[in-house]
Length: 82
Image 1: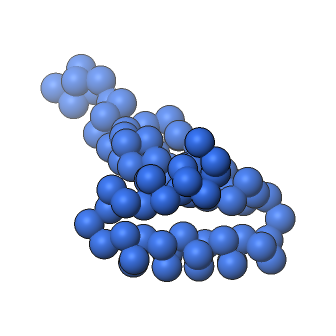
Image 2: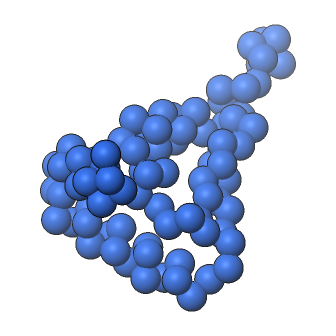
């Protein structure tokens, strides 16, 4: 599948594909003027959402989303709370 076809396929799954397309276009326009950008999230739910909805495939090559160590709620052992 060609890259543009892949982007179209991902965007078609959103509730408002036109809005998603505009947001992706704005990200690409902004990223064009930047060097490498690394964004780290710290939540497993964020990672699931990014992966499930194909968000990484929509980002330009110089924008990288990395999974962080996990949110405090998810990674704190129950014994630390009890």
